[in-house]
Amino acid sequence: MSAGYAVLDQRSVVAVTGEDRKPFLQGLVSNDVLRVTPEHAAYALFLTPQGKFLHDFTMVDSDGDPAAILPAILMDAETERRTDLLRRLKMYKLRSRIALEDRADRLLVAVAFGGDVPAALGLPGEAGAARPFGGGVAFIDPRLPALGARLFLPADGLAALEAAGLTRRDAADFDRLRLGLGVPDGTRDLIPEKSIPLESRMDALNAISWDKGCYMGQELTARTKYRALIKKKLFPVAFDGPAPEAGTPVTLDGKEAGEIRSSRDGAGLALLRLEDVQRAAEGGLPFQAGTATLKPQEPEWASATKG
Image (tube, rainbow, N blue to C red; front, side, top):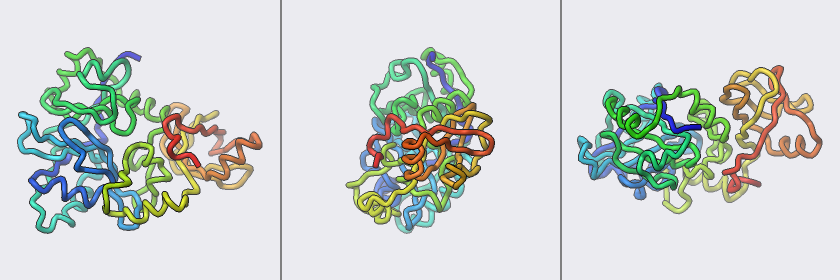
């Protein structure tokens, strides 16, 4: 696949500005914000106090970028839910010297994928590597480098992608890549106030720092890990038959075994009980969802979450 780019309309940039922006976020989100710099991006979660999913986002610091209006932590929230994220963050502002801004009118979110994207963008290939680009910022996806790069750009910054030799593609092409790799996408695959991060393999996708100290939901997230309490996980699945709608129950031998999440063109993600996945593998039994049969696979990147 040649290198291309797409605009992700379902993601929008929000910003946390001010001198306390890092310590403010450090006590709230799941990853180590102190490691976020203009040269290093991260992926993180905002959880409930009970450790359930609320929001996910990548984030990078614009400090040192001459194009930045003010130094800020830039984050890509889900477009339809960004006001909810800003509202929830505002609840914890108290006396922190920060400001919360919606920058959807100034910056768009794009992805670059296929071919040799790091070379085209002047980036090293490791997860999270970042640099100024096109009046904004480009960084290797901190979840998984195989996803390519993510960019926060002004509208005229897309010309820099064309100049770098990337051709415009449909966002559906990136979605196929994501599903083929088995990577969840926000509320398409996680249910707010219900989903548990480790069920969605967020630890293997670099969303959680285990040594940063306290954050919202940290205690229960750590307990889930160290007590091995996970009974279900997200799996990439291939469909034989029409892809079921999200929320369709998955059955094994006539009994409910999980649920379909996002899908496209014969590939998708499903939350499945681990004991049923093992039973299906040992007995050669098919999973069923609607009129389709499906076959789960263990993601190549997920060895850290096996067990």
